[in-house]
Image (cartoon, rainbow, N blue to C red):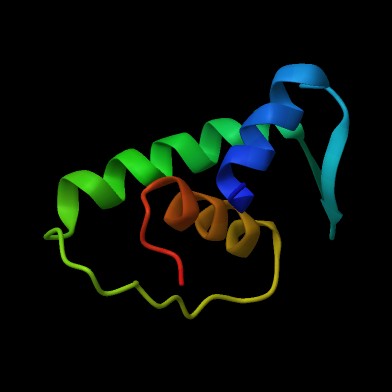
Length: 78
């Protein structure tokens, strides 16, 4: 099971449970899954389909986890 699918499964079971805490914000599993789904849709609509995975360069905060899940859901994570 991929990271993205595991996240969606967990969000379906406990959407209001905290998933990521950092700085001054907390994202629930539902919020994280929503961001990942929107990110995956953006990736699929914006990036030409290839067999190559995509790379990310982001700070190590909640956004990184959201985009990592998005890449996984879009099938573009290594």
